[in-house]
Amino acid sequence: MFNDNGANFLYCNANHPNFHIFSIFIFLSFPSLLLPSLLRRALVSLGRPERLYSPSRPGHHSSPPPLTHTLHTMSDAPAQPPAEVEGIKDQLSQEKKEEKKDAPPTDADKSKMDGNTKSDGAEPSEKVKERECPENMRVWIDDCIRRLETILLNPNTFVMHLMHMNEVIAILHAITPIIMDEGSLAECEAPCKVVGDIHGQFVHMHMLFDMIGRVPQERMLFLGDYVDRGPHSTEVVLYLFCLKIRYPSRIFILRGNHETPAVNKIYGFYAELINKFGYPGIGMWYDFQSVFNRLPLAGLISKKVLCMHGGLSPELASLDTIRSIVRPCEPLDKGLLIDLLWSDPTNKGDGWFHSIRGISYMFGKQIVAQFCEKTGVDLIIRAHQVVQDGYEFMGGRKLITVFSAPNYCNQFSNAAAVVCIDQELKVLQ
Image (cartoon, rainbow, N blue to C red; front, side):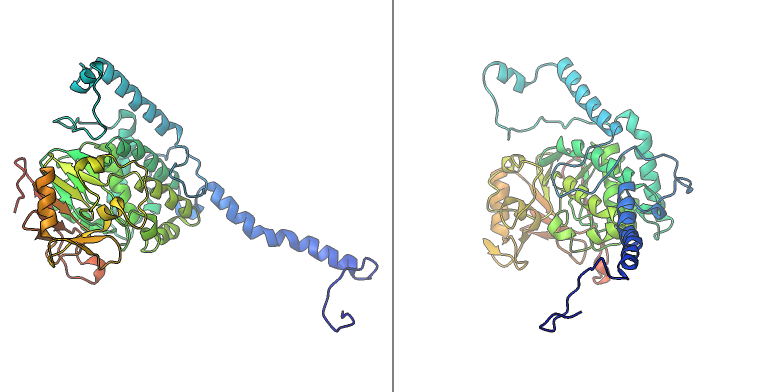
């Protein structure tokens, strides 16, 4: 119909002969319009599409922990853990209280009795205490590790063929208190093997393990960048998390620049989770970021070898500066956190330079020498850069860059390497 100006308009006249037919058509069509939306909501409430997981599929010998997972907005606080994991956390805290009660008073306790307190950045004890996985988690975690290793038999196997989504979320909840107990500067003793970037290359990572040994026989420290680029980002990070839960004193996992939401949402990890888990993968991505925000920013081997993903920072005055970093934290566009994840060494000069990456800095040989002299560190090991031989000495042989992803992105013909440090703090050739 038209008005006086010739403009189209629509109105409903109850006295029109076709009015009741039109009303019946709208009434019958309305449920069909809502049906796709209702189905999507039902799938999200179930946790994942049914086609991605079948309890009767061969290889599923342990049922996933009971956990309901819903999509949520980005937050540093993860969703409520399952009762099983929550009970384990209570057990761990109770064991700590009992150990502290039965243990003889330490020097720190004596100083507190005398009225003297040390700062939060005080030097840790000479020996890092060995921790063990709680007995009620070992069977489940061992089974998770075994299932993930079946990918080596068929590289076309992915995590959604091996685990329920609830089981993945349970792993994230289980590792959170473990990495929070280590501090922002994770400390361990030599001998130790330092691994660089992995970037989702699950099969190549295990080829390195075949040459250098495996956890728990070997103590390992990983420098970050587990996700993006490669086809098995989710599988790599879950495998390392399972090893950390099972052998917390034999493996140390640091944060890389790709363990930040601004990077891994663009370079593959976000899309990978959606491809593998459907719409619930979006919520899972937020849960991974919550864990990444709690990873240590640097590592220290026998108080003499400093490890991080990126490099030094103008704000890094001492090792206590790293110890004082409060987690969870998310790096912004500049500052100490960004530099630890993004800075690079350079041979162009001895000072600080603007980075060609457009973020953080580049630092010269003199900066490395001054930092080592000031902090008593003998060697700095970092990753973050593709080097042709897998490793490269810089900064007057006081700094090593190591990269552990061979044929990176199928665009480089680079080798992979691991830095092996023996009991006497010597780098093995």
